[in-house]
Length: 189
Length: 290
Image 1 (cartoon, chains in turn blue, green):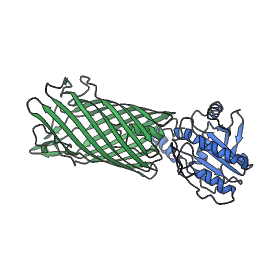
Image 2 (cartoon, chains in turn purple, red):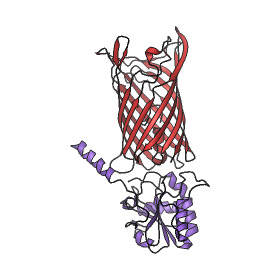
Image 3 (cartoon, one colour):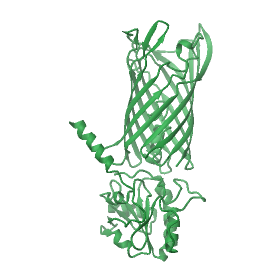
Image 4 (spheres, helix red, strand yellow):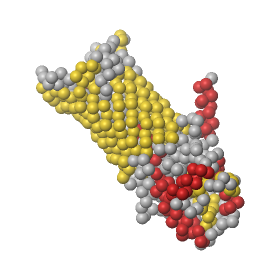
């Protein structure tokens, strides 16, 4: 009986594995908590920006640590152009306290939100840390996948998926790439 | 190969690779690699589990070079091929010294991850393992030198099935794996024999540093039942071996990684049986594509 229950649980979990979101589709509801404990409606916030970048954060993943500087560089380049950035910690143990500490330690100037329920990762079909979606001003997902083609070593010839998608959307063009591979660690639930 | 190898030894990005060099990480589609292994036997156990150090003038050095590749099948599966080359140097006071070797038994392995580590906080990652080892090596009876150093295979097909459970806790990865192996019967001269069923249990803990370097500690125990010879149980012919390993994985860039391990078989009386106790090391290079 116990074996049957465990087997059923595995089947259900496997069946509930995150399905990738389709570029072009509207972003689902995304709610998370900021460092002050206030609930943020990320979807509503996205409709007030020209372009919105949402990255799934991981406190322990080496790939995240390496990509912090690229996120910061993009924030620096695009904040004045009406691009909003959110990082969301949807892993096991996520809390406003952890988000506040991690954001301070990494020098983030964009909000790092906490999603203890993991619902945002599931809604975005994110399986790995640094998975990022780029939204247009109508709140549609226009890019979904990794920040770039690098994993833990930043290279000069990397394909800058998120940067290029933001650049294209700001220029009124279709993003040249709509889906990219995420090379980060498995998100822990 | 996709079952953790005893002589080899990576949480997420790097963690599972320290445990199983030939295993694809979540983001990888293909890999190819080569490892070398060298070991020095310092003693052995007999059929009753009694331990003895090497006799005066006796020594054995074991070497192996493995060439392997793995490819992702669908999202959660992987298929791998391993080709081993085996060399043995053996010496005794009475028979002198000799060295022999050649291609070993080629292995094809498959893995299907129903769940990956960290996907659920309640249910660990669950991987189903299967493998087939083919008798491409030279069986003992064809090693026609005095010390049989030319033997590079078991002379029978081996079918494996196993289950791997693993969970990540931030930078830590814990793995428990069990593999059962059955061998086909073989006939040598007038003797019809079958090696006993082999059960291997492995427990590993991996820590992944912020720079993606990972270190692992592994303990494995392999238990093989008595062989059957011409329908009769060959008592005290089974084999058992306890092995401890410390392993590392060192990424050099996103596609290249170095891996290695040190292993040691503790000479615990009545735990091992019919096995050499060995100390040695492995080193490997792996290239992967995403």
